[in-house]
Length: 190
Image (cartoon, rainbow, N blue to C red; front, side, top):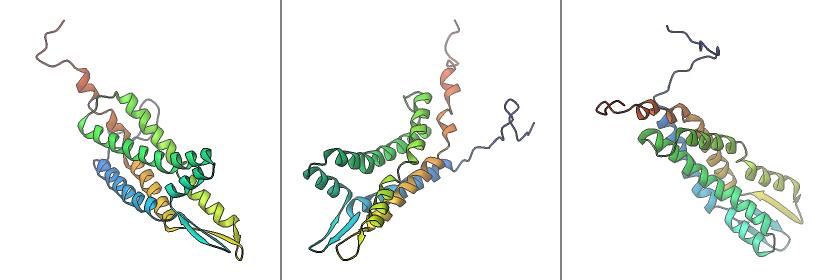
């Protein structure tokens, strides 16, 4: 009666947060809104003696492809475009399925949630690459690489999607499973 710890494992019990889904959607929307300029604004600004150039994430990946660095180009596209879009779709799917139910089993949805949580830790790798490049190439007279405004927008998008995944209560995935498992009251017993 009213204990604050689990009787089986002794862990602290945490009550459900009824506003969890709303917060998850709010952070998700903020992440999507930050992701748009992250792909439209320049991620890097490169200046040499002869020219100054700005490139977006996709523009830079296509430029690498054109110069024969196909592997790096694919890695950048997957890490900067594919994975963030997959996270947006996964979080939206989990939030919608928690509210409306889903055909996928709760176990599959829980694994999807765990993947989103795990990937969140590695999503800032693009921002770290830009920061490392900017710090390494600072030959002020000959060449200089500076982060563009997209790097901040991309970092915010990653942070917001991580907050969205953390705001989502994964226990909602399992809600209603007992009701689905029970036979309807009108069904004849065997």
